[in-house]
Length: 142
Length: 142
DNA sequence: ATAAAACCTACCGAAATAGTAGGTAGATAA
DNA sequence: TTATCTACCTACTATTTCGGTAGGTTTTAT
Image (cartoon, rainbow over all chains, first blue to last red; front, side, top):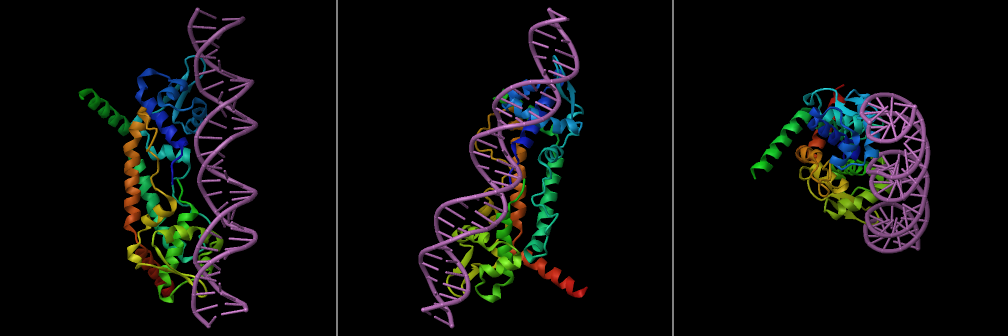
């Protein structure tokens, strides 16, 4: 019952991009350094986001990535479903043999799935950004 | 983000035991057959529940297992935490290096954790049993 | 005594996880 | 036009987890 680094790194990358929207295209190298993630591994995650039109890309010298939409258009749930596959805690597609155990648990798994997705879809990149600004502001006051 | 067979099988076993409370000690063989689970694999899961005083055991001839308490005393969340370990979707124990990405996500993971546990702790074996009875009743009517 | 049950320990193949490594292709600035 | 910086692509790999098997030992009602 864990979210893998793949999904977490994708989110961290997008948060980083959201923070640096004004900087134009941001090189993967910089994101990797700031977020303390292996750049090579990030390279492997990027195509997933790229294929879903999450990012705008510039290749070559001074190339990099940008968010293709404003941060309030990205739900955390959406990103995680892209990178992690379904967030559903149980595959109840096949082999629901109808044993009493499975029958009894099915509604529980469905409700849990609904709960998880509903919450994660309610949080956007913009929300995360707002909270970051707040935490930075607090740091300044103290 | 999946719950493994370990936790699901444990739940199915307990549901089976709850259904057969009146039958005295129930042999693992019977549970395995009814729930369509490898008995040998179940043998490996049982000690986890046994160590937490979930079960009463009788060894030897006509031995088997019983619930040590009434079904309303068992929360699904409790069973899953025993078998799966923490249900928390992210280990935020170490390496929270303070990169903006981690900082921003931390409250989200915590809230998700709270949500998951809160829901799963609200469902008891008795609830599952009640729903099963209902579904059996519906089958009879149709 | 014997059969049926729990209990225990070791092993094992496949898949997923979390990366590395090394190279190709495109864009820009000098 | 050439050097450099970037994205992009493909393959490999070590480790861990998952989902079991296999085979034996101990306990106990009959």
